[in-house]
Image (cartoon, rainbow, N blue to C red; front, side, top):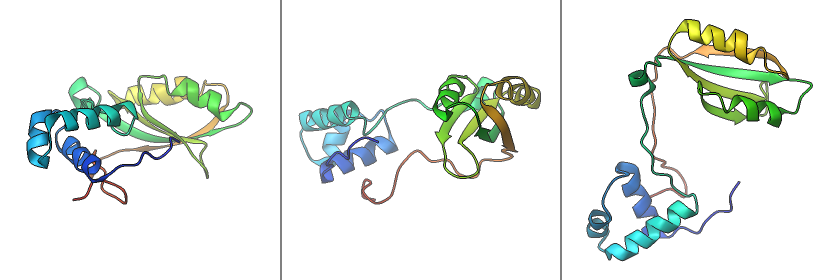
Length: 158
């Protein structure tokens, strides 16, 4: 885990604006925050370089023909979990992978185009992966919340 970067009030306000619109011009941010554009530019550059924020375009997989999402809990044995995760996280169908404590060694979010593709993923790819001894799959029926902004302790003030 990276060391915590000291974020002051201006950093937090910039983060809040970037969460609202990752393409907001520096001039607009500077106007809203009543600071010089150069100040905003330097701050954003530092936040990007330090990995505090990543500005990306997030594509809805349904527009790419991937309408089936599943959450897969995976159990491993006989092979280092890190090795298994390193292999699985390279697969295009895996949108999210996290090592866990508890029932599963890691959790995957898998996004595919059909139930048949999910079946192939689970039975032909995942099951055939050395070290994978079991999995449990939950089909996502409807996404009821998705957020990209972070509001919590230490986050940008509301």
